[in-house]
Image 1 (cartoon, rainbow, N blue to C red):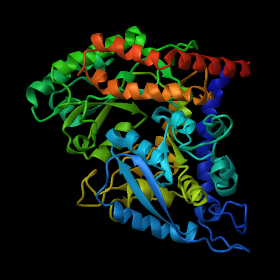
Image 2: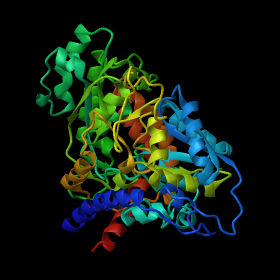
Image 3: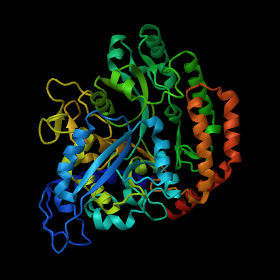
Length: 510
């Protein structure tokens, strides 16, 4: 346990030190074939091309889940200016609302539609997409086109996100632990003098939700969604849509979390809250919380939390939020793969796409443009590390606030908003150090042996999850049917495969 704790603690320290060092150091070596052609440019120096033809111009697409932004064209124009002399590329940014995200990417991959950079994560069917060949093997591209990123990244991040020894995505450099809870509209917390220190579980929110329901007819008391059922003491293995998890108590027996008493309890609560009218109208189909968040018409919402997450959301949504942690910090195997960037197998320019990934990890100006927008238009600098909303504008209403700061590159070269704690990255380090590490940190699940079974299970899951998790369908009647269908699709085989791989991993740790 102590060994794993040291691994997790060391991970962020390495990332912080190397990120800072690389942003201040130049690389004056000539760019040559086989070398990282973006290293010098990302460090702020001028690369001299030697015996190498100029790169042909290409357009690269970027896909991520989120709300489309009004000023995206202006941001693309600014990114293109910066990329011209670095990798001679232009970009198209594509935000896909969360409700349609999985279907959109699946259809694009299945149809062979060309696209380049795409957000992925262990919880976002990463292993399933790898199994069906949706993503390129990036292993041979990393040393050649992203050596600067590899040099600054802790090796555990790359090794811990591999599938069969190969990297199919580049992990984002960010926090390495998780905790879950809710964020509340602070204006309403203050208006009704709610004591949030009394909230230790979702159930404890109910008196507040009832007050909002009774006294604020234009406000959704609680956003209903499938993530609400994730507030359970289980570490999911692989795709979150496929059952198979271990308890967070140090045991490593894989179980079906849908058959546990804790799942029964939370489904019962969701059914009750739906009956009381706490959720948005028709939560099964109304799944994109973005517009309501921006409008300030949701009181409470599930979130994966980090230190200062409420300040980030306050800036993004344009009104103050406050967070309540309902779980303890925990470093799961999936935290290494919590946010990654893959390259589609349909990409026509995978080498240039890898160059762009490298820049997003090493070039603060480029990364901050992608996540914050155009300097002077969507934000202004307070100092070298801090930004604020331009005078006369309102946070979250600048025309570009995508909330994708955790989805790309290295968070440790992100600017901080002036409402954020200046020592935020140091707080992230302390957050990691406080986390309880999983017994299987560094384990990477490979779904290839059961890819057909998992594909069938995902389809069944998608047909039931929204209705079950929002209480729209009766869990007492439908949960047994849901579980039975998954078992007939091969769930027992999948759980056995997960157990087999975990047991083999644990043998290598002795």
